[in-house]
Length: 167
Image (cartoon, rainbow, N blue to C red):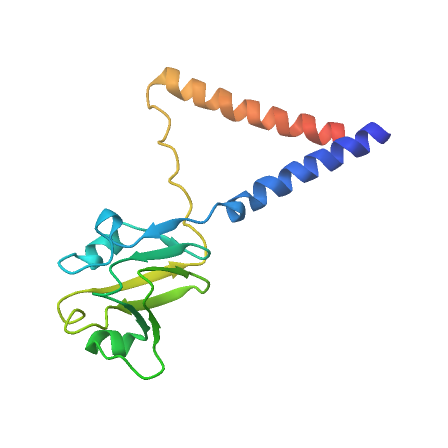
């Protein structure tokens, strides 16, 4: 009886681990502008389109603090390159911003006309990463169909065996 209880506990723990494994994913550190950093003459819109930002990720802005800064604003101020009095201004030359809330964030350089010249970044932060793509469907040849059905049957037999052991 004790071994059946142990088996149930192990199966339950494994099921929980699989269910919550996506939530245990490691956060990503995004170097804004990749090897170019936070600078003029870089397309941050195109850069952001190649990235996926998820809660817990970090943006790293690297730049010359004598030439640039990072200003975090709301959407309307971003569109106008307007730096309100209550804007968050970062100016260390290596600023780290942890993405702690899902939704949009807007940043620009508040030095001179840098924002108007395109030194601005808009991102969307997701709650979690979207699911990974499903594997390709099984081959359509008869041998492939048989192999796929064998795999399905093996999964059903395994599930039934686990159910019998638990009972």
